[in-house]
Amino acid sequence: MNEMRQLTREVTDKEKINEFLHNTNIGHLGLVDEHLPYVIPLNYVWFHDCLYFHGASEGRKTTIIRKNNHACFTVSEASGVMSNPIPAKVDTAYISVIIFGKVELLEDLNESRDVMQAKLNKYVPGYYEKPLAKSHLEKYTPTLGSKTAIYKISPSSITAKENILNETVKFTPGRTINMDL
Image (tube, rainbow, N blue to C red):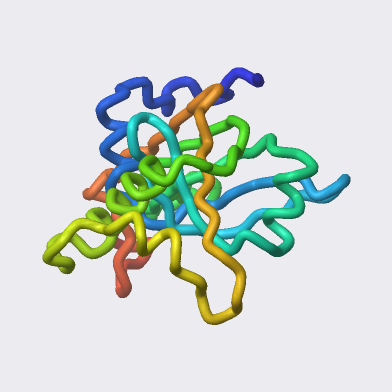
């Protein structure tokens, strides 16, 4: 694993990383398809210190995972742009987390139900009156006909970076260089 180049932006606070992963909605799954990268945006859930996502049990993603289950999952969120009279110093405020690990297909129905319940709690909290039943997972087939597969990435490493927003130089529409001189 390469060392982070900008160590001043490294986030090592595990609580902050966990909170970010719990609250951010979209991540990007990176796989290797033969010799080419393949990256797809997904919603996900961070649950029991592992990352879970679901999708069709057939298709390109599934085929790639069967051949090579090494993966990288990246989650990031921008919080603003910071202006500067020197163009090279204009910067973006952000936080990002990169998780490396191997993707595995969940086989256990109880674990699958718990993961999908956690995902419902994340994306539509309080919407359903009853917890998700195992029978729903057993019987559910989406309109395209392929069963739903639930995948788990157990992290082998996690890195995080943050560039904190400086509110005094946050760019907003109408701001000009004259305001910063």
